[in-house]
Image (tube, rainbow, N blue to C red; front, side, top):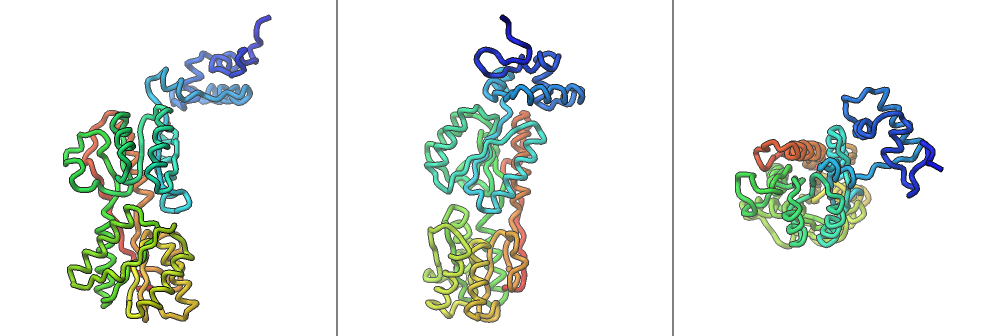
Length: 350
């Protein structure tokens, strides 16, 4: 007895042909309708979608990529999704890619180079069309995978370190969208100097590459004034949190009471510091200025409102996705490195 038009084939997996029979259209129309091609009549698209839903049809991305020689997936690797910074970046990138017909495969690396390498190995099995990856600090294995895959790649959040790639942007995988973390930190340090601060501590957690670049910007700016003191570098490899920021503020006040400003490497540490200042009845900024980095939600609502650096993470996600799409279309993309800049946001905490 032959299969009913509404019944999947004997393997139990509903096929594109099953959906086509149910909708009364050709398989190519089903494929185009489910890809969202505008040339397909909206009524046909709705009919195809209803049939696919009724039959439980799930497209096979690998089969689609093999048939069309073009994947519809883009891998995005970010360190964390508990950090609003990367949530904003990812949402902007995904929205841009989705509008162009691409789906995102997200990998969370937890600031771990080995985990990043393993995630990349696994996700490359899906034959993605392209890759968005955070930063430039990768394992040798990851660098080899990027080179061997030959897929278009855009690096996020940072500009390419000097001496790693040349100026032409012709080499695969050498595109980036970000800003100078060191320059932004130097600008924030300069602001504190202009406010008359001379004993400026740097307090940081997590200690990822971008944090260390901010440390270097703070350090170099103070060294130019002859004011750098290694003892005022408060570095903790623990994950960043408000609680840790409060603890660091209390320790600095106790062990280095002469400090008149504290540069926290991100806003969540600074938020915790401001709460601790209220508990300890330390006046900010009269006794000690407090500044942060990233201008996360709530930084304008702290007591006092937090001076910080506003980082354009949504713009980075959007612009990186747009560049990747251009690379996928085979279009020339210049300049190779796109510096989106940063903004110093001065509020009452400094």
